[in-house]
Length: 213
Length: 213
DNA sequence: AGGAGCATCATCCGATCGGTTGATGGCCTG
DNA sequence: CAGGCCATCAACCGATCGGATGATGCTCCT
Image 1 (cartoon, rainbow over the protein chains, first blue to last red):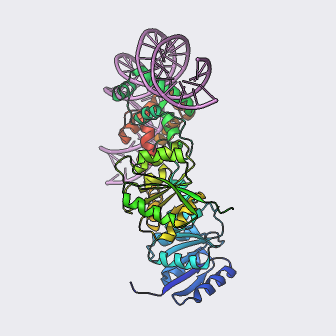
Image 2: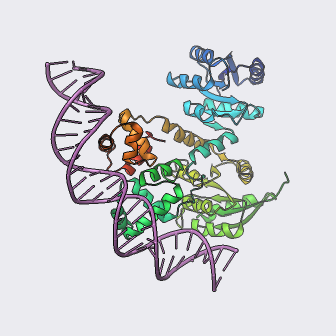
């Protein structure tokens, strides 16, 4: 792998941040900042024109949101990898940004070396996530495990799974080698636990809480 | 934050790997390997008995799969953080492992220092993902954005939404200012479209296809 | 103009469900 | 060892559902 120079584009509404990043990357001959934009719309234009390897993108911007910009680039099949650089890890746009096609997601307080590493990784298409973001992602995926799933007993879950497949009580009984009465008992119990009154609502509640899915 | 010693448990079916890891961590006074297990079942037992800070867990094991072991620990509310250490990044158990409650996920070829860092991070509850795994996670999150419905008519969706809330046909009729007969017609139609035979299965199918949720 | 799809309504009936009450035995925890 | 949670079973009954069938009127597209 040849040590190519990585071309960059900086998109951030704060001139101070843009200058800071520009200076930082200028100090390393492995990078070349092609340009800057102060908003998402302008950023998309520049990306299409300058075709950088990596785009450092802020999310919160007045002139064209970062997420929309990322989505626009993804839609147009831009070659550039987008590395989100944001200030707050509490940002609610985290997941949307990643869904929109961001290659990485870092906090602005990341140390200089980490930033460099991340940009190189992004240029190669590798995913880079700061720990806080990784946690958030994991939580998003884990929605089934975390939210108190210990509510239903194993047997009750088993019955519920069959219910979700459209199985009748009698069939469930046969399937699980128990009597229909027992199936009904399990159902009444899990209705109470889920706070619903029929099987359809139970299935919905189970999906909402990640018990099914 | 006091620099506490981090206690470890190693779960892997290969003695060589166990020895290697043990030796590696023995060389650093910041870690204390409490024990080893050769399988998931044994691993769970040891975790409950020794109560380590971090568990290094292999996924592919003959005696009790890693994913099951992680799920078991999560279910029992074990304090230990699980750091998955596997050989292949193509492992299909990646997502399940994380869903089951793994705190981190690394490849075995990770450099020694990275491993140490990851263990310390895991001990603090921070999420650690190797790049390949991060990519996989991102893909998993990004996937659900695609699915389109369009199958059901607006009215049918409306009925289905109420069904998911446990509303009876009669109540749905009142709610939508139509007759109960009409509600049933909508239902039979949407059952056919979704390929199911009752309301519970319809709700499940709708969640699976992203029509509800 | 004609057909397709949608929304609306009606009736009838067997199948299924949900609620209730009551009971037995196993397992774990305090 | 008592009390709690779980799994199991029973019998009964009213409420609800699902299926079949047939019909009317609307809109959209061809």
